[in-house]
Length: 198
Image (cartoon, rainbow, N blue to C red; front, side):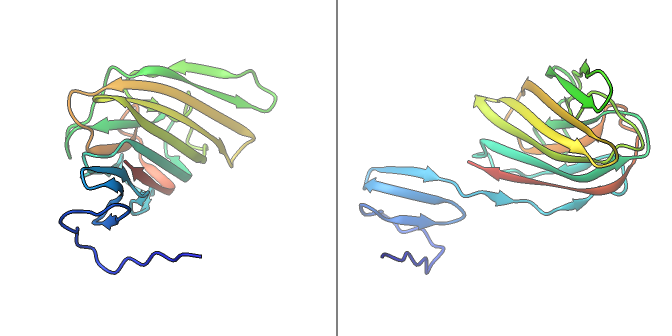
């Protein structure tokens, strides 16, 4: 049995065959001229979604190719749909051009589906009583185009939701915002976080 011990966070100058380097990122090497990046999953810091109209995660590294947005017991004080918007700067978020829809199914009721173009909708409708749990996975398909796919459920009622969308950003993604379509409803319960990887 072999044990790998990382004793330094300093990159070695010229990696030899088989070396693994650590400097916030992992690299597997099979030659001096070729290194394959194996980016670890990095967790953001969980943020309580108990106040304000949005929660932002900023300063994402340029190498990010996959982001998982996590919702734990998230609720607002209004009826606007919760949505995720992608940003290309700490204060510049894309607010239009999202292509996709969201569906929810509640016990005893017909499924509800709707289009939302201002973000990636976490369910097709909203209510001050909704308490949502689940994840939205964002993946970079090519260039600055991102695809989102999410699933989750409510704890206030027997209800599940799913969503799918894509967006072509004008520049490299650097931030993720959780907000509502109206932009005025206040978060009043739960927490959110992200995981990101290359």
